[in-house]
Length: 194
Image (tube, rainbow, N blue to C red; front, side, top):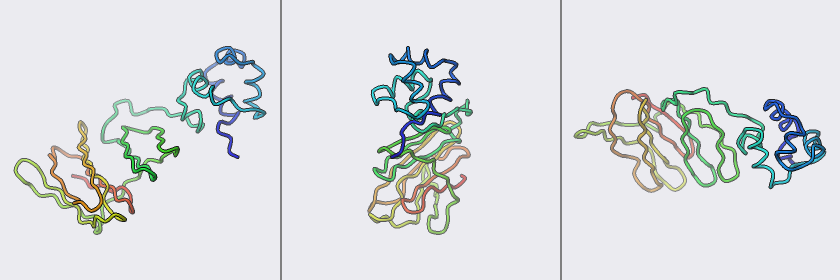
């Protein structure tokens, strides 16, 4: 059975926060002996204590559970530094500006790595009035389809969700330089500089 929180994680976070076992125990309303048992893997915190424990240690519940703390070094939150996450169970699409810990349907999701578009995922862009008509050369079956297209610049995001058996085309205002992303449910995330 996997331990959902490891003792070394609790100890490292407690020491980083600069509190003693007794101080942490007082905050949580448990004994210092209990905290010691957690840290030496002789016991586990009750599920009702997970949220208060995370708060006392200054981390999110997800960081506490995974043992990985997230430090946002992307202070400017430039949209071009966005990360995309797609849940393999429900298809939920999540976009963040920088690294973060993302969970959906009980799974911790890795950020998708974008590859350059290829011949099987060719993007065509045509000027139409004051917009651009964007189409993707791709079948749109229930088994194999383009899920979304997104256009990111330094100050905005345009996002269009596609559905199986629909068309993989849309109109967007392409202003300035940016990145055009598409997500194929079988081949993953791809991008094209615009």
